[in-house]
Image (cartoon, rainbow, N blue to C red; front, side):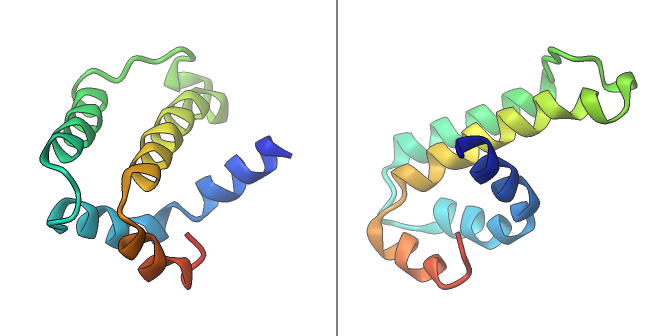
Length: 92
C-alpha cells in the first residue's frame, strides 16, 4: 500500500512546484528547515549519486525519483499547517 502511495506521489510531482516555492517564501518555516531543504536539493543536483545508472532506461531513474520523493515528503512534514491546508485542496 505504501508503494502505491509513493507512485501516486511521483505522478503528481508537478503539483508540488508551487508548494516548494511557498515553502521557501513562507515566514512560518524556520530558516534552518529552509536551508536544509535547499542543501538537500542542491546536493543531489550537483552530486547525483546513482544507485542504478541512468543508462539503464527506466530503471536508472527510479533511484532519482525515490530520493526526490523523500526530500519532498520531508518538506511537507516540516511545513506549517497553514501551508498544508492551502495545498490540501490540490491533493498534496
